[in-house]
Amino acid sequence: QVQLQESGPGLVKPSGTLSLTCTVSGFSISSGDYWGWIRQLPGKGLEWIGSVYHSGSTHYNPSLQSRVTISVDTSKNQFSLKMTSVTAADTAVYYCARAGSNPLGSALWGQGTLVTVSS
Amino acid sequence: EIVLTQSPGTLSLSPGERATLSCRASQSVGRDYLAWYQQKPGQAPRLLFYGTSIRVSGIPDRFSGSGSWTDFTLTISGLEPEDFAVYYCQQYGSSPATFGQGTKVEIQ
Image (cartoon, rainbow over all chains, first blue to last red):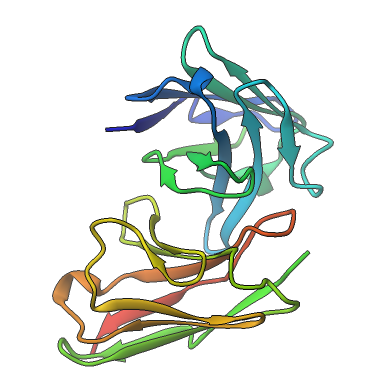
């Protein structure tokens, strides 16, 4: 049974960098598939951030692309999200997800982690 | 980007009733790249359907998905207590993937 678990700081200072890691169990990332990040803004719904293939190729939401990097570490069976220059508007629950064969998909989600941007 | 508009925002129904949820796209999505999710409080969204009408394993057959191009529907034929939740549609055929704003199905 494939499971995903997000980890990382729950509080980030404005102008700082948000860093999250998703650990995958029950499936080897190096076997294939795209792996992605989605966030749920308070009262504002769901926003697709981007995804990474096991080879390292990436797809990003153009609205966030200048601030976001998604990377994969197959040796640890993890993938990561870095978002720079964060503001209060980036406060959200961040989910990692197994996208599958489509880089824009989100078939299976982690439980999510709340990240608050505040000084 | 493709904007998805869901209606109604809230649906107040009783157990056993039929729920019909709508998702309209600002441009064609086709049939292959429309998904529906269910989200309960404190939980992550759960995929119900992909490719408009392909039910995920384990999803009861009282749930059905239909539609094409710009108009899509999620139907729950007889609401069970565990079905009261928020439902989102998503298109994943055109980057960026986008979600509707959600329909809350609440107990009347």
